[in-house]
Length: 135
Image (cartoon, rainbow, N blue to C red):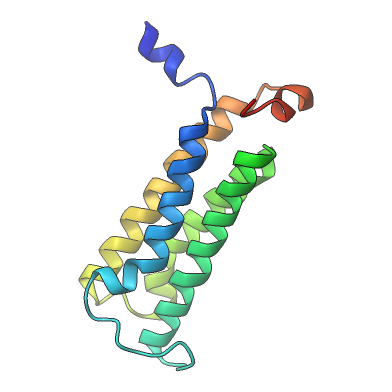
């Protein structure tokens, strides 16, 4: 029973986990070991790197904003970014790169799950309850 109550309250570690996911998304092209392309190139590897950096920074920023001042739209934004990260290998054409596609699908899935959990926890809270988050 206590395990169920554990998931009913939005805790600050969830926001820190979101920030960590943002950092992992930023470095994901380099984790796989093959990102030696510059940011300014307009072909697939350059777009994949630029996409990862932008999405990672946005996920990090939204998680940090949730830590400071909690709003429901931040969680919805994280879910949208997670969905974009999962779809981006197919949009930008690097779906044939198994390692980076795996990293983006996995990290995007974690972002979606974490954002859905936080949105579920905060769904019935009033604006005053949201303002007291983290205090």
